[in-house]
Amino acid sequence: MKLTSTNILLLVIRLILAYAFFSAGLMKLQDISANADWFQSVGIPVPTLNTYLSAGIEIAGAVFLFIGLWVRWTSVFLIFIMLVAIFTVHIGNGFSAKNDGFEINLYYIILLLVLLLYGYGKYSLDTLFVQNKNITNNF
Image (cartoon, rainbow, N blue to C red; front, side, top):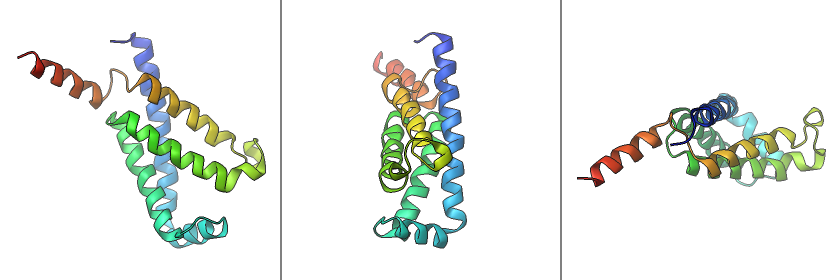
């Protein structure tokens, strides 16, 4: 198992991202109609469906990150959401977040890549399941 400081860092990254994606998903769900109209205005096809999909992926992803379940797969889905956001909304505004650029999305992608590459850490349900699988396979 990895060093304790690495495990704590992976937990902190998961919790920060969980908070961010839960907030974003919840905001979309609070006014589906307005968000669907906005999605349509930036050229996202089937805007109502995509509003529900993106909100659902963000909220489910936040829950999975929070509890540490399916962290690598969750990271892949959330990276996809961030790439769509960058290329449909933010890229034309440049890098800076103060100009609604892609800066924050890029930071999220970098943190998600850390989870994708280094895993979920000791403090996660994924670790619990892996340990139980190893115990079961030893019998």
